[in-house]
Amino acid sequence: MSVFLDALARKPVPHTPIWLMRQAGRYQASYQAIRSKVSFLELCKTPDLACQVTVDAVDQLGVDAAIIFADILLILEPLGVPFGFEKGHGPKIHTPVRTAAQVDALAEKIDAKESLGFVMEAIRLTRAALDVPLIGFCGAPFTLASYAIEGGGSKNYYEAKKLMFGDEGLWNTLMEKISTALGAYLNAQIDAGAQAVQMFDSWIGALSPAEYRRYVFPHSKRVLDAVKDRGVPVIHFGTGNAELYPHMQDAGGTCIGVDWRVSMTEARLRLGPDVALMGNLDPAYLLAPVDVMNAAADAVLAEAQGRPGHVFNLGHGIMPQTTVDQVRALVDHVHEASQR
Ligand code: CP3
Image (tube, helix red, strand yellow):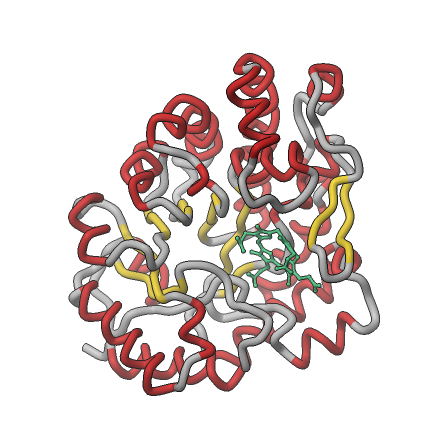
């Protein structure tokens, strides 16, 4: 029995389950100790270390689910888009993808079990080491395409939008290649033992609903269709624009992950009773006094009304300035305050 999987299945649970996006990372001393010896990419590619940091987060926080330690960008390598991480600057794609010749050169298909085999091995090791469910994940087509085109993080996504608006055919070819690879990747993670999967559309809020529908929806749907009959819950997460959630729900997912810019009450009204919801505390509350954070968590729980189908999470990932004690306090508080 798992409160996390039961909540995703919209069954009644004894307390609201909680896990946190980016629950493994630099805010932990144990993570910093490992990172002082290996680079971030080496860590992702060394299954026993990836397993260890995944398990450390569960042990330190007492959360109800684990997420495999990896990164949404790893799939860019087998697709043919090499990248690295620059200290303090985040990801850097060596040659941003902006021309037809570059899109043509990308792989039509990837063998995820082979090229991303280290993720599958990390999943197998972690399943054997854990007694809470393990989540596999990928980035969503728009978020990955925007990294590939921009060459890294971006504020306004002008390069990505320039290609999207300027050459819809080329955009669709790129998005088709990415989404086909993502479907194979998620299926390989499920085969390796992932008990739920999440697709992160972190930067989707840069678009309007009409643009989402035209340029993104068919591609996100392709990924989610590829896993919809696998019998595992699928979390579809996006941030930045609550107007998009009903369209994301249409594209697929048994749970929609929402950020703090919309209330849980409003999200439930818009998305209806037939989907689970995940969210939605602003991660900035982890930097506030504990009583202020707890009151904000209570407000999220009150809005969710103890109805079936709520998984507590942040509206986006934990920030590096957070302390482990504060995160642990949040997990304990949500468990106590939601006892039924
Ligand atoms: O605990 C977990 O959540 C599992 C691991 C995980 C990481 N990244 C580890 C990581 C997950 C699920 C991700 C997802 C991810 N990666 C997203 C989607 C979620 C989100 O936050 O929006 C995105 C956009 C990325 C891309 C990425 N990876 C960026 C922009 C950066 C650099 C900026 C940053 O936050 O550090 C990374 C690096 C990264 N991914 C780190 C970790 C722990 C830090 C690397 C380090 O140790 O220096």
